[in-house]
Length: 529
Image (cartoon, rainbow, N blue to C red; front, top):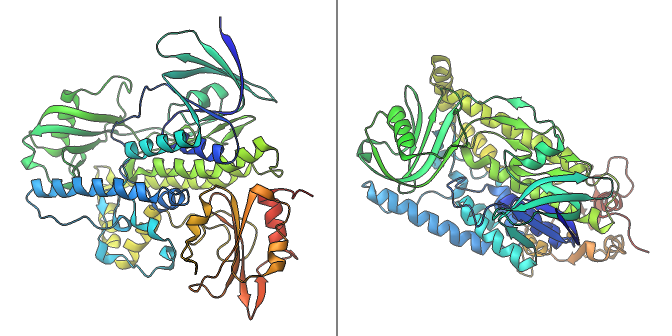
């Protein structure tokens, strides 16, 4: 018989990967009491995504994590240098993260990237950090969650739940076989991966396209690797990758999905795939980490069903090329965390929580199509190979490279928010203020921010009554003299902006008489009297 624990958590998060951990941190910052349950006993060290994109780096910078991310990147660069040296290369450091990346294995050349493109303006130092492997990020977020007071229970698996209008009863079972436990919570969020139990049990629709590939990614020890080419390589039967870390290999075969996703990958299975795709008789002598993947491509039609929500791979799955899944999930967590915390605390304006699906679903749909396009270019058949030659030619132009870098880096992303200012709906620029601070420094607490750049008492007066929901900062920004002020949401998105025209605050308002008041009501609720 289950024992009911009368704890009353505001939110239970299923899954302690990077998405679940970041979401828990954001909820805790917003004033929610959070429990994370995870079936694994420790951080998952399986090789997965190798990098974060610019929106992810910027988001984590806004929570004070940039120095730790930079240390992780330096360790990754050290490994890259070791690989190059072992392969007979020099000690050259790989290019900065903004140049890193590929499209369907078509590598982009740093010299063809137009650094003057306005999409990359005001990113700040976070734009120089990207080489952060998923396992390292998970360890950093575990430490952050612990520091914020998030409760994390490992070796605990979610086995079911009942959701009603007032809350969710979550059924859990310890993996050591001890007595099951029921946990009462206000909300449940599934961050439990592509095979999400939460998604399946809640009955979310999950349409998409069936897989057509079997892929492997691994860190191994092997002999005979001298015949492998470095980097991404297209052959008559598929694609393989060697490097840029010592022992790292990846293969893609287009003969359908694996017969059994659950069976552990053996050295023999991985070796057979590598030999088949590369044509080189390598011998895998030891496997340190390996994962099997497909291009199963699906997305939940909504990310919310009553008091149950989804984030990360639980909400969308696709091929892993480019680490898009990790970055898409980080964006989900940043968008959802403060909104759900506002709902928990009781100040959320009507429709705030539903804006999570409205804002994130289109970006998820784009990522799915972006990965599908790469699969189409990688197929080992004549039509795809002909198209690949055309795309390769385009990628070897300044315009083509810059376009692809903008897409890969994520700087194109924006939400469709009310207001006519060019900054509205976009990630706020990392403005350098006259007192030495950056805008990112003002967002560490996870609250909304009104940045008054024209020292206007009338502007600040409109923010009265919001208490700890909103920070108000008056500062000068010599680098943007024409900007009067910004309202920045807790997730770093510009909700309102105005220009300074000859000492007058000019709003791009459409038919609104006071766009700032409207934006405050939409994102910060009703002020207290």
